[in-house]
Amino acid sequence: MSSSMHSRRNVLRGAGLVAGGMLAGTGFSAATAAAEVKPPDQWRLVPHILGRIRPPTFPNRVFDITAYGAVGDGRTKNTNSINNAIEECSRTGGGRVLVPEGTFLTGGLRMRPTMIQFIDCQNLLFQDVFLRDPAMWTPHPVFCTNATVRNVHIYSTNSQGDGVDLDSTSYAHVINSRFNTNDDCVVLKSGRDADGRRIGIPTSTS
Image (tube, rainbow, N blue to C red; front, side, top):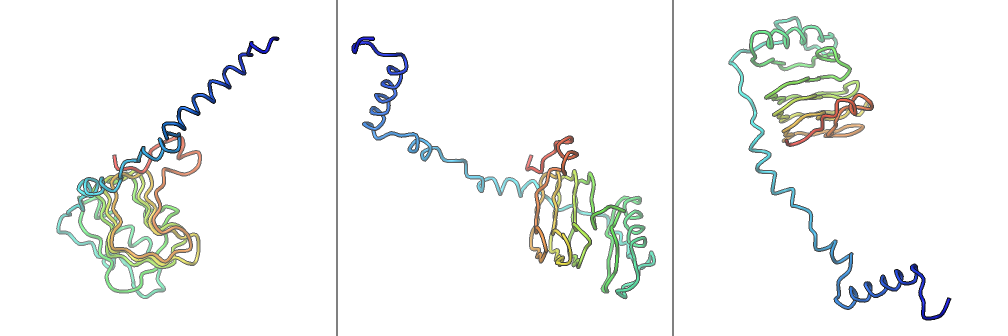
């Protein structure tokens, strides 16, 4: 092959050098281009998102768990009594389930592995609650829309106890709450393992 001839590879390499020289000459580079493309400011969307989250109002009915047999002595297990109050509240069209002053020992509410699980709820308000030493996760909204968690204090250093697990839930707001946990404080989830991938519902603002 004569010196005046170039292989295809050399021609392409030369073209690349020329192109590189042109970019260098103009002061332009891939790094410069990436720096000039700024991601959208997601914080500007916060007022719009919060405007979509509206704490619900409920009928003026009170379901005191002590009326269903709960005892706040720190020794009596009140799981069934609290569940009965919740179910009666739901069955009659809503209201407020009242946990009065005292220490109420309970297992999982609504008979789920987590301590308190809300499934497929709209207009959820969970507020003014202090929870200590749950077995696993604590409030766990699943497939919910328009959820507000407000003034909730959770102490869970005894196990894999999260604070609030928002799971496949849209438009949720956690505010004025405190968490002392052995694991996560506020978690955004989209299901769990194969089941989560199969259903494919993300936690989102849409």
